[in-house]
Length: 153
Image 1 (cartoon, rainbow, N blue to C red):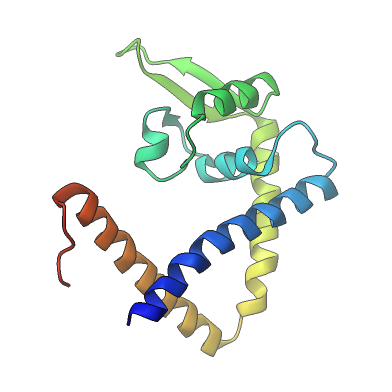
Image 2: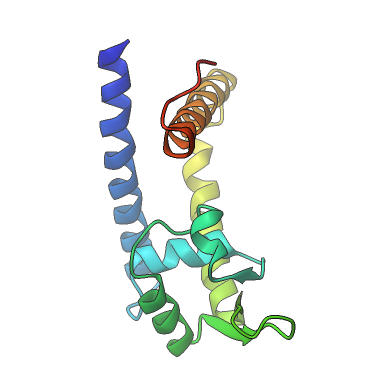
């Protein structure tokens, strides 16, 4: 089991980098030069939701360390709006602008097109098995971070 486990860890990182390459290519195709792939992915993950900055990492929308830089850039370029909460002045809510929503929709279309490659029933079952495995990995790693050891499931 050790070999497949290590292979999937390497594959996760490689797939993430490849997906960012896909987003870079799509941004170029759309003529968007003011933001990068990481920022486009952040916008896509926020989507039509309204989120608080501190929730970005908690919800898994953003994994980087320079979130404030990216939020500032996305706001300056007109993809996001920021609004202080009326109840907690320290809390800032983020929402996509029409420009941000347009890009989000373009990425959603790209995702639909890419997922069509896996449209047959066998692929759907295999993908669901992969999702189940990835969710189990996420729970195992989360348990390790929170409790210092993984729980046997």
